[in-house]
Length: 131
Image (cartoon, rainbow, N blue to C red; front, top):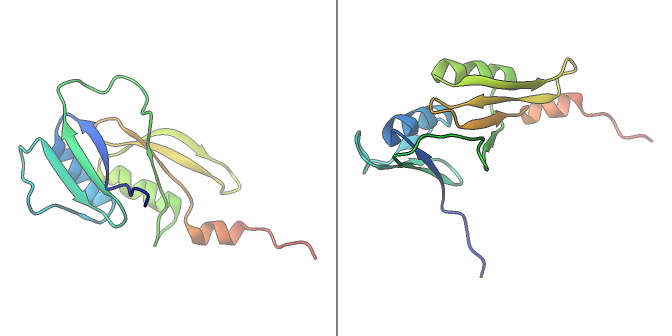
């Protein structure tokens, strides 16, 4: 039998605050067992939970691992704007004039993540197979 990923764990300065951002970003919830001031806070997201662990050191370099988000009910650009409204910042813009590409954002503590095109956007730009 193989293993399953239970949580993706993210070091941070304020576990509850950062978990709050990600709970809103993923339209999920913080575990009922967690409260402000806790050093470990779980976002119970569908698929894999995100566990935020408070650590004393600040983020100093680029993430070695990051999340790629794919919007389910809106476009990539609408999702980018929504996430910026929640407190993310645009880190690098890799969107192309033809609609392809992605945007790299940073969460409130500077952790990078990407927003890709939705499935509907990908389907709309897919080329028909040659006959």
